[in-house]
Amino acid sequence: METDKKCFVIMPISDPEGYDKGHFKRVYEDILKISIQNAGYCPVRADDILQTNFIHLDILQKLVHSPMAICDLSSRNPNVLFELGLRQAFDMPTVLVQEFGTPKIFDIAPMRITDYRKGLIYREVLEDQKTIESAIIATKEATDKGDGINSLINLLSLSNPAKLKEVGENNTAQMLQVVMAEMNNLRNDFGRSLSRFDERLDSSAREREVSSFEFDRARIELQDLKQLIESGAPEPIIRENADRIQRRIYEIMEKSSPDMRMRCNRILKEIDMLLTSYSAKNRK
Image (spheres, rainbow, N blue to C red):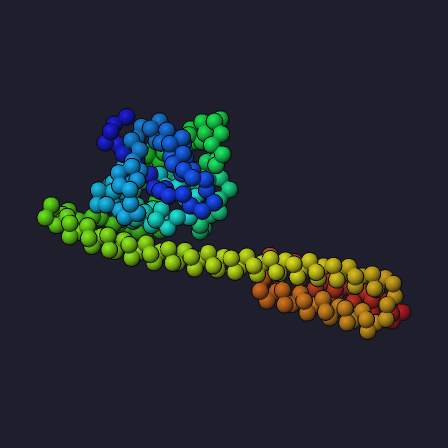
C-alpha cells in the first residue's frame, strides 16, 4: 500500500442522536478502515488530524485532492453532506456507503450506494468489509476508464468540474480565512434547509397517517352501508349514509398521495354501483 495513495473518509465525527457512544468510530475502525486498506489505500479521517468542526486548509486539500474518498450517508449529517457536495464539485471519485435500513436523504437513484449492517457482528463485518472493498476497486477502475461512478458532473452532463487556484505561502492564511467564512455560512444554510426539509417530512407523514385513518373509517362505514342495504333499511337512511361516506372520501382525496386517491376512487365507484343496484331493485 502506497502511503501517498490516500482515501479520505467523510463521516460523522460526533455521535448523532439515536446512536451508541463511539458507534461511528467503531464503524470506521472495524469496517471502513479495513476495507480501504485492503483496496490498496491509506485511510484519512478529518478528526484523526484536527479535533474540531472546522475544516483546516490541509483537510480541505485532502478532501479535494485525495485520489479516493468514501462517504457515510447514514446519519444525514449536514457536515457530511456539505463535504460530499464539495468533493462532487471537483468530480473526484467517491464511494457512497450507508447503514442498512436508514432513510434515504433525497432521490439518489442514479447514485450507487453500498450498505453495511449496524450490528457489527463478526461474520457480517467480514462480509461488509469485502463488499465495500469491491466498491472502492470498482470505483477506481471506472474512474480510470473515464466512466465515473457517482459522478454528478457526468450525470448532469456538466462541462467542467471546479478547480482550486494555486496560492503562495503568503496568501495561505488569508485564503484560509475566506474559505472558512464561506464554508461556515454554507454549512449553516445547509443545516437550516435540512431542518426545514425534516419539518416538511414530519408534516407530510402526519397528513398521511390522518388520511390512512380516515380511509379505514370510510371502509368500515362502507361495510355498514352494505348491511343496511341487505337488511332493507329505508331509502333516506341509505342515501344519508352513502353521502356521508362520499364526503369523507372527497376530503381525503384533497390532501392525499396519488396512490391514496386511486384507492378512494375505487371506494366511490363501489358506492355508485351499490346505489345503482339498490335503485334498480326498488323500481321492480
